[in-house]
Amino acid sequence: MGRENRLTGGVFTEIVGTRDRISSYDRFLNVDIDLSIPHTDELVKYCNQYKNSIRMMKTNFEMLAKLEEIIMQLRSKESVADEIKLSLVREYIYARALFYREGKGTKDIRVIVGKTDVHGMDIDLLGNSVEFMELAKEKLLKVMDLEINENVKVLKNILA
Image 1 (cartoon, rainbow, N blue to C red):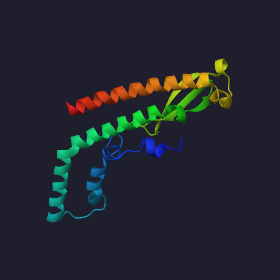
Image 2: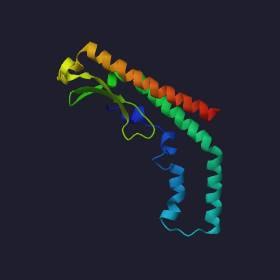
Image 3: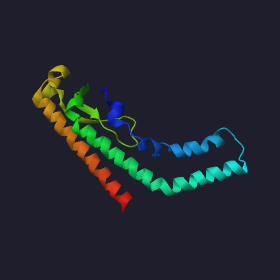
């Protein structure tokens, strides 16, 4: 999965905050608080201008971040056949591929393709099986489409 940065790296997705991560612009504004820098009139004036500008552009940033997420997801979907990795966890065979999702620690998506009692435990053999890899691809595409469709709905709400 050497293409991680190119397939799952965005610009505005890193700027706009999530439930778990403070936005870059808020982190920037908090530097003076974190470093106990005194608030002079001049500093307050420019910080307020910055805050007002962010407030005016925030919806645009959120829209751009959501568009980036959808674009990254569609790129991953289009190249999924080249990115599938298989793994075993207990009796289950998992397939994973690069896939950006806001708020998720990992930049991949995983599905259970089957059980080892049906398909066997040899990952190399399964990885070379056209039939098994098609099944893995099909299952990954299904969950990718669900995520993409949900993000398209969110984007439509932002634009409404």
